[in-house]
Length: 179
Image (cartoon, rainbow, N blue to C red; front, side):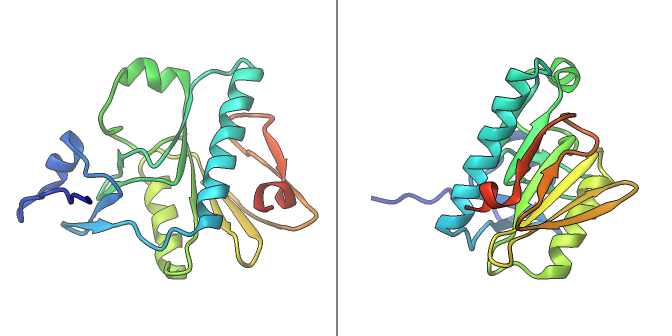
């Protein structure tokens, strides 16, 4: 038996912050279901989240890595596919239901149903809300774009992708991540 969350019609951003419904974002005044997730999307999401987590532990940098965790941007309630939070922000916010700002490092794995302009607007939204680095992962075309406040890098098969400002020293081969 499948049950659906019952959400009131006047669900606000503050409601989202207190009790974010699973697999939903609060966008432009309404709840929007995150859809279009494929098997490949899920595999990359788990792989990248595990890689970030393993690296933060082995490097001693600490923090925490998450998948599908809610956060607030300046305008919306979002759920990045993969997110990393620094030890300093963990100490500042402690246990949170929804992080009241963007995570410092986020990745969005682009689904076949995503529109290009929407993905780049979401990246800008994260960067305008406290995020320092956004990874946009395009599984089908095998491109990964890393965006910071000052640069954008585009990598593809045969190349190695590295974090630019958050989780220093982390890198992974694009082919390995997208395999």
